[in-house]
Length: 366
Ligand SMILES: [Mg+2]
Image (cartoon, rainbow, N blue to C red; front, side, top):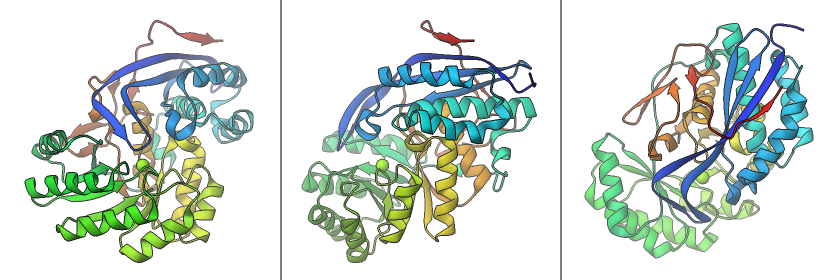
């Protein structure tokens, strides 16, 4: 048995309250119901990972995720963590419809491998562009007063790029953005429809924001994921860049989006595809001349740290939506990158540089 042989896989559910209800066009959440993973290697190195299933996007809930991990975890035993690429492919073959479960296991095993190799996770991807980065901040769907008070709070902490969740009621969406625009100078918006708009709604939304003088830098997934025609039309007719989020849940999806000219940006999320495929989609996106955005589900700093490692290591990410740890009431993780207002500061330790204490209901496979 080599030093990188996986000898133990542990995972446990973790609940983290969300400070303000997270309402988007497709659903609402008050609690992040995630799963933490810890992988131990023969040489004692340990790695952490996180699964953040978001049923409305991936169709995967936590119970399904825990059940999948039980099966997949057994497969990891006695494999070498240095074979993380091959293992990621095997995981995908075994559980194609459980990207969050796969993501948690992949992250933990890659993290363990980096600890054993004594390199930060971003170094594994190349370490292309290691510096402080700025994230946007997400404002969920809420009434006018709540929307403005949330935006004001973040503005006072230095945030200037507001990702507004929209797509439930176009006139109300326009009024919400207008209220924020009139209150806070020097800001810009991303409008994230989460597939909630029709093509006409989205055109009306863009026009409405333009009329009150708002700056809209990106329209994210305005319409249903299959409707690439409308995404292409929205790009043409508004002149505002469009980001494909739900429309890209695999490398094949990314190919279709590129072929049909449906987006300017692809929003990479490790929870949609697993870590290795996310890295592949990112490389493909840049090769095709499109731009990169990166985001997450409702994640703690474990999953988001893995995404940040892609930003630092691969380079080329222009829009960062890595804010969800800031929306959580507590931080269950020690070490790793940290936030200073909207800035994410890189870490120097090995792997993700993080630790999390196992909860009460740990499943152990050894
Ligand atoms: Mg989105």
